[in-house]
View 1 (cartoon, rainbow, N blue to C red):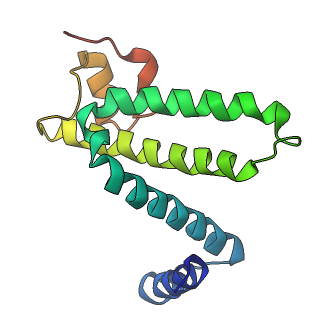
View 2: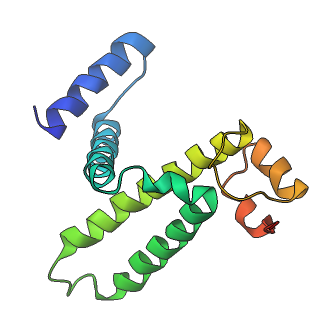
Length: 142
């Protein structure tokens, strides 16, 4: 079964079980999320959950790095001889965003290894679900 077939199967489940109205664009979106998941599985088999070690702070760093890399390469995208590498970078960015959310949630649950501690203001913002806006408020407490 390929990614397209799996996405169609999941689409049917979402429509039947949750009564969601799923169109072709939604199915394509789901297919890309599955591609990101498969990339995660491939890289995680190699790196063995290394994303957990650095916690949310490391995930935020990688989000910034991947975003700058993708942005910097946009100018030469038309001339790029390997656009599939840019797509992999973008799928990697999706996974780093998910690592960030998973690490923040682990930190909020008080789990070990979830990253560095933050100030009260940043913690309030994270608790209120503003996890991506909180990066500007973070002050590391060593």
